[in-house]
Length: 510
Image (cartoon, rainbow, N blue to C red; front, side):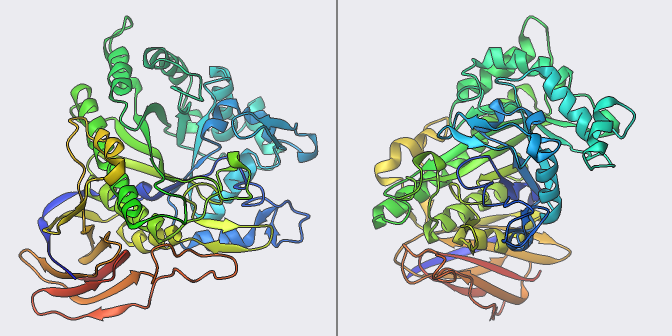
C-alpha cells in the first residue's frame, strides 16, 4: 500500500472551473451519428423526431455544457446547405476523410441543434474553411441567428425553426495544418482574418469565433500564427482573435483492452502530458496576449487505440476500459488545476468513436467507464478550483513512451506520473475533491488535510474494478460502475483508502 499525504489549500484559489471544460465532440465519423444519435422518425427504435430517446436519456446525466459538431476533419468538406430542408431532397455525399462512407445528410443543422437542446448542451459549430468560402460561413451564421425578414432567416423559419438559434461558438476551420487544407500557419492566419471579417453578430448574438491551433506540442504553429496576426504586413490584428484551439491525443500502448502494467503506466503518463500542451501554448500566447483576453481551448483530446476487430478501420470504434477512465480523470483534474489558462475542452468523441461516453448498436446503449468519470466530475462545474499538494511518489516517466511524453513540455522536462493526484473545487461552502490512484496494483492510504480548515459530512464514491482490463459490454453493462456513496470519518483530517487503478470523488462541507 502506498502512503500519501495530500493537502487542499483554500487560500490558493486558481480560478473558476468553466463548465465548458467538460465539453464533448460529435463528428460524422463511423457509427457516431448513424445509428448513435439518428435513427429516423420511422424507426422502430424509440425516438423523438428521429433522435434516439435512449441516448438522450443517458446523456442528460452528464450535464454536458457544450457539444462540438460536425467535425473534425469532416467539417472542412461539409457544406451546411446539404443538411437542411426536406430530408428526401438532401444530397448523398462521400465522407472523404473517413473511409469514403456515404453521408445521407439526414442529420443536419436542425437535427443537431434539436439534439443539443434535448441533452442540455450549448452548440459549437465548426465551419468549413478548407473547401468552403467566407460567404458560406457567413450565410450559415445568418441562417442560424438572424430573427427574420431576410431570405436566409425566413428559409430557416420555413424549415421549422421560427426563432433564431442564437449560436455563439463558431470554429473557423479545423486542423488546417492537416486534413483541413495542409496550410502553413501564416497562410491560415490570413485566411482566419478574412473569414473572421464576415463572422457578423447576426441577430445581436455575440459570436465566439475559434481559430485553429496546433496539434500537440507544435510550438512553431502557435508562434507563427500569432506572429502573422500581430506583426504581419496588415499590422496588429490580435483584436480579431477571441479563442485559439489546440488538439492532443495520447496514442495507445498495447490495444484498447490488451496491455501490460508497463503499458498502463505508459498511456497514463502520455495522458498527463496534456498539462505541458496547455502550459506551453498558453505561455507562447501570453507573449502576445499578456492579459489573457484570448481564450485557449482543447477542442479535441483523449485516447486513440486501434479500432475494434470487426469494425471498419476508418470508423475509429474502440472499446473503453478502466484505463481510459483514469486517462479521462487525470485530464479533467489537469484542466481544473489550470482553470486560469483553459476555457473549454471537448473530449473525442461522444458515441462509438475513440474515447466515447456511450457504445451503442441498433437497439442497445451501454455507458463506458469514461462516461462514469464525467458523471462523477460534473460536481466540479462552476466551482472555484483550489490548489492541491500531494507527496505521492512518482511511479512512471513514460516507460517506452517517454519520447512522446517529454515532448509535451516545451522545455523537454520529464513528465512525472504520481501514484495519486487530483483536483479540488469549492462552491457555496461545499468541497469537491477528485482523486486518481494511477498505480495498477497498489492501494493508496491517503491522509487528507485542508489547510486552515476541515471537511465535515464527507462522502466518497469510487470507480474501481478487480481487473485493470475491465470494460462494459452490452452483455455486461455494469462491470465498471461507481460504487455506493460511503461516509468518510475524520478528526481534523480524513483517511481515505483508494483501490488500485481507481477514480474517487469526495464531497463535504468545507
